[in-house]
Length: 164
Image (cartoon, rainbow, N blue to C red; front, side, top):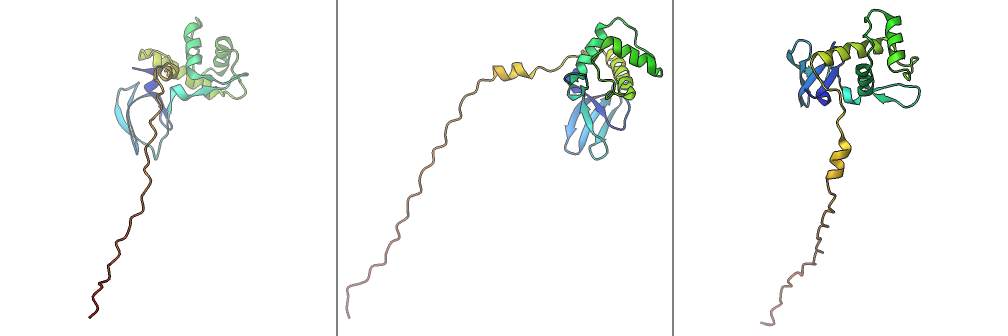
């Protein structure tokens, strides 16, 4: 399972693997219960985890950077119900977080999502688009040849010279 295919669905708990997208929604599989279902775009929004950024005191960072810092830290994950323990954990793991704009519910969600990703063996790494762009050679498109329209000559009716 690829990290780039993992989405969050508004109004629904947990994380989902994006199987297929349609014009009126998407087909997803839940990472918790492995159930496949259709998500209507009229009722829900999908957010790719790759596109989610977190506020820091400097520039925003991608959620994958936070997850990688959580994985690199030896500290045990706190209980989701203990607000002080969660804040202390993130102060230790990622001290640059802007704790005024990153709410407790956001930190709680990050812990829950991290646990789901680890349980499902998802490798947390961003898709590298820069490599793909460098390998594609830009060849200029040939310019279309446009021919000028030639005026059409109208045939004149000849008058007969017969005088009768």
